Length: 357
Length: 281
Ligand SMILES: Nc1ncnc2c1ncn2[C@@H]1O[C@H](COP(=O)(O)OP(=O)(O)OP(=O)(O)O)[C@@H](O)[C@H]1O
Ligand SMILES: [Mg+2]
Image (cartoon, rainbow over all chains, first blue to last red; front, top):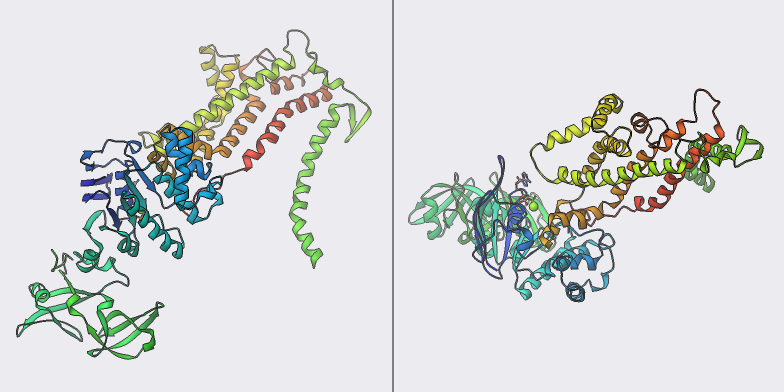
């Protein structure tokens, strides 16, 4: 099912939940809403679900306006962070509840619920109450309940936040695989950008109730349209510094205290027009380089496979990933090379990208 | 070492037992006294007797007075009416107050709180006039309605509190699963609140069963509309000596249903469902 949000807004008196969201979701697409806490992800999702009435704008399912359609007539399934299972019902009763409400014949109800439960790997637990299940099992029940009526749209509100890291990883790929197999259009809310990057066909980045970007994960990662996106997407986050970009002898240079970089012409040209700009560069685009710019190691943070080190050039800190076998310690002198082909430039005032707008 | 540990771990029980003893002695005396002609301390003087229980067969006040069974029925009717009405109205009103945002919600909430705190004695005269105007004075239904009115603010407030603790997500999930608002209320929320509702039902029933002030005020003497408490009071006449044996027997008789009620519902009261969420909101 195709979903279209046109200028969607939600306000409670003076409180703005979301403002002017425009979004197009294709049939079978997996869209992730990504943004910090309080940016309006849940609000948007609940409007799509029909729980909240929009204050303005239009929601379309396959072209049909559904603003006034109640949740039960939207044919959607939803999974909540809190699982929201019915504590007085067994797993079987939980999963079959949507079918019971549709007055499905009992035998069919049991058969379909069992099939979904088997698919979720909880077929053995049908007689248990939710209180006697682990968090992961509860989440599977919630997923089964959302799937059992074969909805045309699946909504997820941070479904994995309450699970431990390992389980989160396996559930993540399981949900993604399921979604691909079943081909159900899905909206998935998270503030975990790794989840967003790995699962999404397209990511909608939100902040303060507004949509900042709506694009594929690689686009969002490689071509951040605002400083906010650049900072928010990517882990460890992008290094952001203030630089002056100017052209001398046909080459573009970005300079700040102790730093002097040559910038490729296509990027430099756009930045030089502004002069003083914010430059962003990802940790993986900075490396130890004997020909590079000298700095001093300020801190080392072991991440397992890599060490995240904090190098001070002048007064500015740069973060980068290095091989642990280099055995760097605080106070060591290093030289850094910058992959300037990947650097981003943003307007200092509007915080919009100078490259991708 | 082990002994000291044992003593420490049994200390709370000891404390409980000590504090319960006076109450138990009271009940014990009630029981013994109701089967004796006279007691000296806890011990009966002379033979045990069933005389005190003769009120079950014939009314001690003579003709024109209702039998104990009629009075029991009255009391039961009032208590049941109260239970059903209070539970039904409170759970609907509590749900609305907890979940829906309607004009006047805040005012209504503070009003119920004020009414709950209001000393009901001061209202008796006013209510007397209201009941007389409505021709409900000296009727069971009149007494029942007044008592429901007195109990309602507490019930509504209690139920609102219970509903406040039901997660919104659960309700939203049910709506999305295809339930109507009434179905959500009846199939999802009420069942998860069973222990709370049972508690309210017991409160309402017991306070109806034991009520004295309202029935005493709005019915005439030990007439056809008397409840057990009013009936019991008739034994303390001003002209004749109080027959404590019968008083204890009637008191015990009044106690039996309440005790049974608790025995049968305490399982329900204690079986509070663990929520479906682990750490969720
Ligand atoms: N029922 C409501 N009444 C008033 N304001 C609300 C209501 N629901 C949400 N808001 C406000 O709307 C904004 C967006 O909230 P929302 O719950 O959509 O955030 P979110 O992106 O889901 O955050 P989180 O990641 O913490 O779940 C917040 O500022 C919140 O305070
Ligand atoms: Mg949220």
